Image 1 (spheres, rainbow, N blue to C red):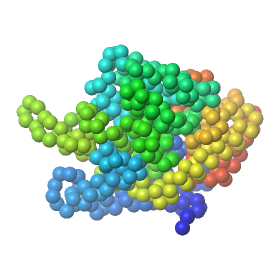
Image 2 (image 1 turned 135 degrees about the vertical axis):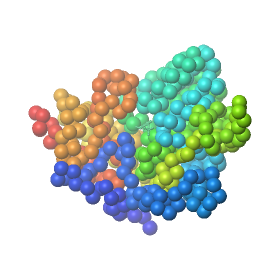
Image 3 (image 1 turned 90 degrees about the vertical axis):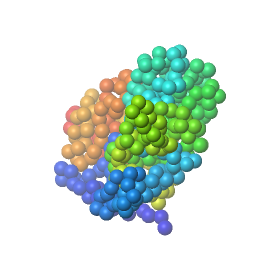
Image 4 (image 1 turned 180 degrees about the vertical axis):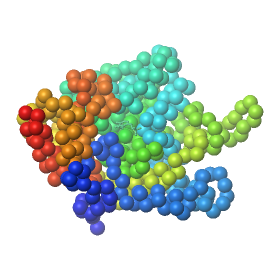
Length: 406
Ligand code: PMP
């Protein structure tokens, strides 16, 4: 039976909070999502009943912990259509995953003069690792320029990608513009030139069905905390041949096959890329989040989020003195905006005093804000527990903010 969104809201204990005497309206899920009871309980249960280090000992607790940890990996693998759970590497999050690719694959395979293609809409996490890699390897960083509405045209991609392109690194969904990029088509263009496609899925994996084969990705990075899971856990998925070929980035316990005084050899995947004790509870929590999202259905999650994103865009566009960024549709579950003559931080302050959590700032996308010609924006973002009533509140508080500063 399908559950209504009201039922879903009841799963999130934090949503009963009052902020400054108002019902909490949480519109900052693009920064981090709230957590349902089942995720909180999975973590709690692990620490109360099965806490032990993984992969190391034969005692009962260690075996339970290892089973829970590896179950979580299998759940994630299924969730993104990975061929095998060995292709799922647990990391701290999107940022770490992308850095691991840049170091572990990039340092080994990128040669002087090779080109790395990104776009101006990238989060700093999907830009700075490539800037740094380009500097280390004397490679060239190239940009696919954006259309006026913040979308990417395939002709522009064709213009930029060429035989020298080694890596194409793009986000599937922009955390500021809400743009949904045609990654499958771009992957095909990258592969025609022999390049590797790296996808920043931080904003997409939480919000749409993900199939790494359909995306044509070679690497996919995402974070647990934006998809109802805990902080400090994320995923690097990679095609097995690429993960096998790349070098580890963290050296130490659990990632080795054999060590002597002078040298060491590496364990099989995924251990090779998971040096040290991992975030076991985090992975288990992420597994519970995957279960929760799967039970709703990612098609339902995507339709709901995109409908809210598009509705918010339309509603804000209709208000005088409001600038809204990015394409009207299709768009992800967020909307970035500015109110004429009012600093976004002041906007966020008035929102907070009304119990509404939004984000203000550069959203870790300074080159994109430079492209937009602003220093910062406000951003409202939505998830499964948001409703159209929250968008009514968003519009009402915008009116209030404008009256307050008039
Ligand atoms: N890429 C995008 C598109 C994001 O929105 C974010 C989070 N704001 C990141 C990367 C980085 O994620 P994390 O901070 O969890 O590593």
